[in-house]
Length: 556
Image (tube, rainbow, N blue to C red; front, side, top):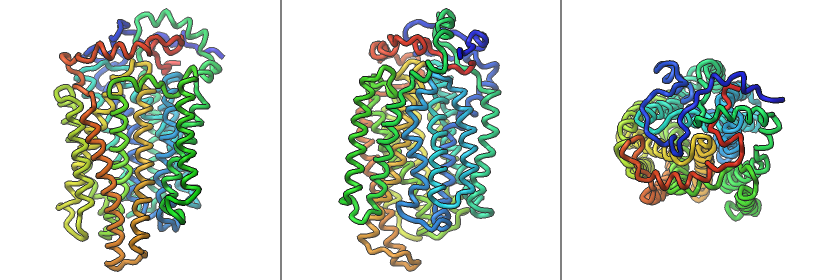
């Protein structure tokens, strides 16, 4: 069945098609927005796509100890309640990023919000921890679909400039807002109701947001003044079968299998009888490496790859992805996971007090967003990234050396605050760097690579840190008791995880020294324009008639 593009042509605007026009600085409001209020509302609604993952993880951060008691699990089994979510998201985000570029970013965000609401509701009725892990994993498909599509909408709609920096700051505020909202939802639900309540709340929220996406978020603009002449060609090829032929299902299968094998091997190493020397752990990790190699070889051969490998030729892109991998192993995979454990298991505080301890995160995040919006066009991204990695390293070190039963304000408070600054700075530099790496019609695919790295980093961090902690506890002959000796041994295990986090961010700091990232949105900052244009010429020569114009099929 042909897609009736001609019926909706008037809903799409065309702009300049000169080579590199999408990299020119502009402070004008994109014409797809009826007003500044409409523009801000769209940014907020789309920002909650990044809040989805942070909200889910924030709520779980408080709920994990309670879930362990409810289902009677701990160690590696308990870590799956968190890692299954990140695992599925990280394994499938490249596929959904390609779907967004091909089939419509707005439609994908709408469907993802509804999908998340559905499986959040079902999770509340989980009778076993295995069923719960499966439903959590299915929620991960929504978080895989949302961010890259939403970033693609924002990136393709705006040209570089201070206006884009400010709007992207609002958009990027979604993650910290989601984090603190999740903490509050989780803490209040567990303290005054039950863990199921936090899923009821999230389900209701994203059902409402799905409706707002449909009625408020506009369709994307066409970044080509000749695109209207291509509408007839698009009508001729825009069938369901055509879209399916452009999706790399083999690559999607390989990426999902590879990530699952990797995280499963890392997670089971801590609970296996012989640890890392257990045969099935070794074979799983070897198989994961083999699948990744096959995936990369397949991407070089397939006509429409899931991951366009030419993106990696952009100066500093690979370095940026490596930095974010190690940063998110530390920040999301370890610091977030074990901070709540430290408060509840070592200090013995209640879930609601644990939630209050994390409230400074939101204030710190709001401050960091203001600073970022005012400095991205003034301070080179490399310096911002280096500072971010130093802050994350210092936060991990503070947790690693924190004594037992000491005031919250001495170690925990500064560690929590500076980790937020470090994470926000690094994320904003990385997302702006990524959006500048490719032309608008590949924005979702490039963002998909970044979010894949982030989700995999979170999953690998949780699983690897769990293995580190369990190895230390086994060596310390730890037994689950409330006496001081047992608590001290448990704290030694947590310290091992925090030292591992510090090591990861120290590596990312060294890598950030070599990051080729300048300012963003500065009219005088065109030093890499020629180099960038030549590297992007490979995208602009794409022979596919559907992908050549920068179009997102929101209006179809």
